[in-house]
Length: 143
Figure 1: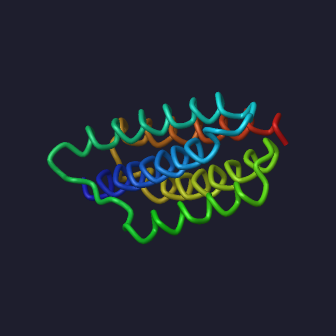
Figure 2: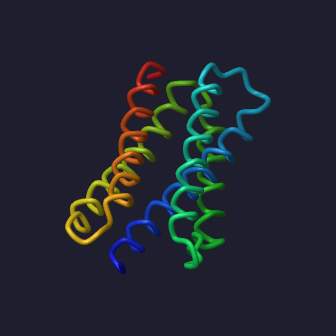
Figure 3: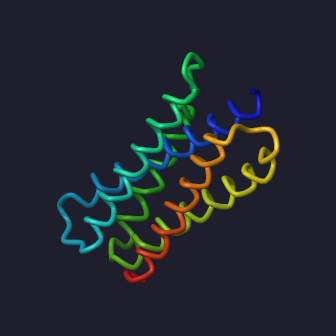
């Protein structure tokens, strides 16, 4: 049970931070003419979906959020990168780096908790991993 909650907590935190940073990026691109915006909207929707599923699966356990400081640092980093280069290829690279980090972490968590977690939680984690891998492939066309 503890392992299941830890895996769900990880999925929730990763999806919540991914949603937050992707929404910040979308906001920074609002006045720009980027072709990558639709792909970014799809990524935000998927992050929201996994965030909700993980939170719902945690039931009575309230998931912890990333710290305010972590969110502000991410927001500043995104703004700085967009100001430096807002081309579709630069945005795709930034997103791919974040998704790759997330997929490596969730893959490690799946291996760590594979034997102890519930089947439903493992399926959610594997689906989250597939989403990240698919998003990476989609974004590669913008490089």
